[in-house]
Image (tube, rainbow over all chains, first blue to last red; front, side):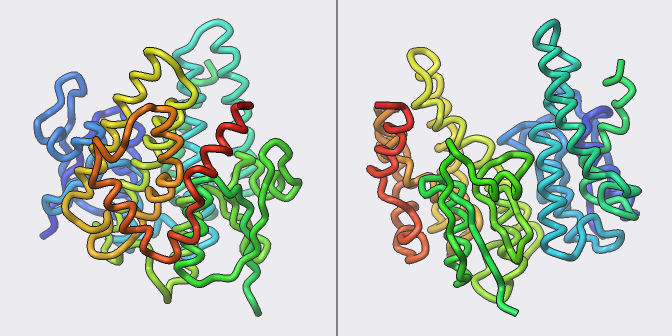
Amino acid sequence: MAELKLFRTWSSPFALRVVWALDLKGIQFDTIFEDLTNKSSSLLQYNPIYKKVPVLVHNGKPLAESLVILEYIDETWKQTPLLPEDPSERATARFWAKFGDDKVLPSVWNVFIKQGKDQEEAIVTAHENLRNLEGLISGKKFFSGETIGLVDLAFGWLANLLGVFEE
Amino acid sequence: MADEVVLLDLWASMFGMRVRIALAEKGIKYEYKEEDLKNKSPLLLQMNPIHKKIPVLIHNGKPVCESLIIVQYIDEVWKDKSPLLPSHPYQRAQARFWADFVDKKVYDVSRKLWTTKGEEKEAAKKEFFETYKILEGELGDKPYFGGETFGYVDLAFVTFYSWFYVVETFGEFSIEAECPKIIAWAKRCLQKETVAKTLPDQKKVYEFIRQMRGE
């Protein structure tokens, strides 16, 4: 029987993606909650490069970086696919997931943590990024079409934080 | 129906080079269009409106952006020849992890060497070697990052070799002195025709940077 462990914190949006992916596919796993101020020796052993969550350990073999983990999950458990079959659509999904992590998330985060003029500039950048997402989802139920896919999981944090962002 | 493949690129871009090596590995015929980044073509702005960057692969009119995403696309479409990624999911995940590491770390830390001075530059040098030592560790005693054969991570990283002279000259250090395995690995990769034909001469890249800096 497969042994699957997920190292995470309660709030990490990157770790939550992995939880959602595993839940969508109906896969059982154990959760280990990490205290990031006092990281476990297991976490440091499994992710020596970044020392971050999430880390998925499958039959003793560790995987780090949430988008890498999501693709691994999709390739290993084929039910409820997260990525489409068509290579062009796959490339597009990967592009938007990366855009989310590289641009949208940091820009929204900056709105939360910066003040004054820096915050104003952050708001402008965040709005630009969000406008691009508007274009992407327009007319569709989910970013990925009729069903939830990689891009929706990648932006799940946004659904949760929209209220906080507006405030 | 014949495939129409166009690549929007810049000769000195280590990201563009990744795509060129992938296309060569698969034996794909394509039209190469050189971009002037100070005067971007309407085609580039139309095909990559979000980032307005090269490389962009246009396959039968549809654009694919971001070099590693393009390489994975090429691997998936032209899957019958010279696979670039391993076939086993765990090894694929490891390959993606390390290519992503190269993306996250190598470019930024290299760039700081020719854009900063003094204390900032010293800090960049330290970070540069920390990053390269990690990569050396991952390579270990294997001939390639991919194991016995040239693969995805090798492709993602070897293109930076053409910038080593830039990095060493601005950084005032020798990469070989600190990371001999990396140099040995790069030279091994250069024995492959697709890599040797794609990577431009290091001195040419250096002249390009000097021109960009207005020297």
